Image: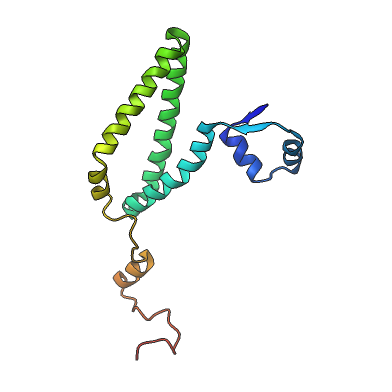
Length: 151
């Protein structure tokens, strides 16, 4: 059985190169870890929320911070992995489980405040181009054909 990591899954999903695609079709027992599946699902949603919630002129910086803290999380995971050899798997991963439950309870308790802090990021917004155009002095009918213009 072969277990794929995130980079391999992305590589195979993009069908590059053709030789790799044929090789994976020949393997009968392939699985994907739940961590890899979680990474593939969380990253697009997280980046979408970062771009919706951040101020437009620092959105790139905030996306960079998303990836920076993903790296910090991977470093923390490596440190937990080192603890397995020193303290044993039950104690090392038991701490991770306890920290996850405590974090989940805290997030559950402050969920309404978190939604308030989002300032309606899930609502429909005026397109940024329209706002920019109105600030630049371009009329709202600029892109309308003559038959659609307000006369």
